[in-house]
Length: 105
Image (cartoon, rainbow, N blue to C red; front, side, top):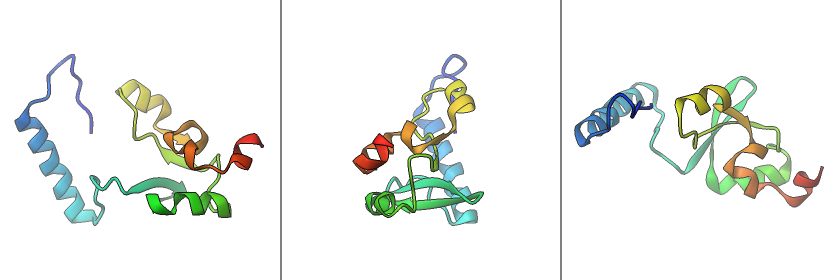
């Protein structure tokens, strides 16, 4: 969900309305979009939500690696999202969870 601030500034009402839309989608899908304790990965063409507390172990075990695909949750603009919406872990904030050996290869 995004807002073009050149067209309209966010307001309390629009933010509340947006959260309401997200909650409706959550009720229909069972996915909590506001839960920041899980990270989205695209694995075998399926979105998997991995708990933050499991990241280091999954990288260490090799289940996830520097080229694993994730969603760029920190994209600041629509243009950035359109170009870099899906990125490898090594280009994301999760790089800090990668074992040092994974970075040097």
